[in-house]
Length: 321
Ligand code: PBG
Image (cartoon, rainbow, N blue to C red; front, side, top):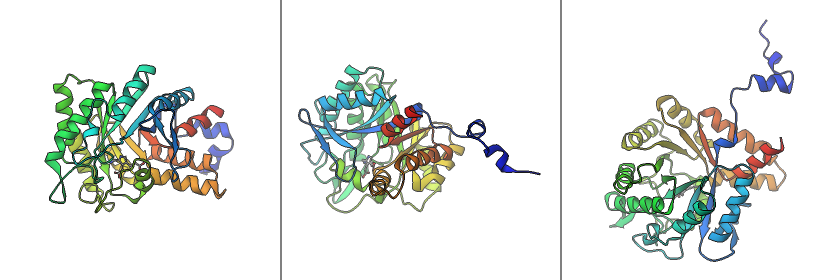
């Protein structure tokens, strides 16, 4: 008779038949950079995550590398914001300075940079505003400039998160024109207009000053549109595509995995992190078990890589085992 429990009897048998694994090569940790010296600012809605001045960021990245971290996703939070997001593409912008310092200290560490305008605009939208609307085509050259400035500072991979149409094409062309053909594009192709980004907007000071992001981010009810967005980005030159958020969108990750032949990235976003943290702080759940189960679920769904605020913790737990 068929009995499934035979292969569940002992840990070793279970390990032998395990279908999915989570390894150190699968994880990416986000980091936030701010101006100043020796600064480590707590983010109240994301316990355990900080904004670091560049000098402190170098130490934080060092700690992450020590537990086995291979790659980080970097965000900049500028002091100066304006209508055209000048600091997003300034040579001495906060993110550009952070990239330079990280690559100088850890040349092998993979630096991925978020390419977007929302933290840099005074209105908090991801593009330029014309007549109260986010203007797609006026935004494109600014995104291209931001990506090139990150590459000049030493970024290995640029990750556009703005959701403007045709931005991957613009960024790929601008990178190539500037001899950065080896800099890869990780496109936030399938980015839903999600309430799970709430804590991030506190962290990155990027809450829109008016309206919401529904005219550029995707409707959570749509599946086929996800495939359309991702296919389009691959055609435009994306080397990897991302689904964001992760946990409420595992079906989308699985769908893209079947249909595309590029690496699929899952972004386990701020709200997902904060909910687990809050419940763990109340002793309602076991944080380690919930995080590792969540991360393996993203891999099982089809993600090749996972961006998670819990990456450093997960690496530590994996080292302990
Ligand atoms: C910038 C950006 C956002 C996130 C990553 N890049 C926020 C947003 O679109 O509002 C969200 C990350 C998270 O919630 O962890 N556009």
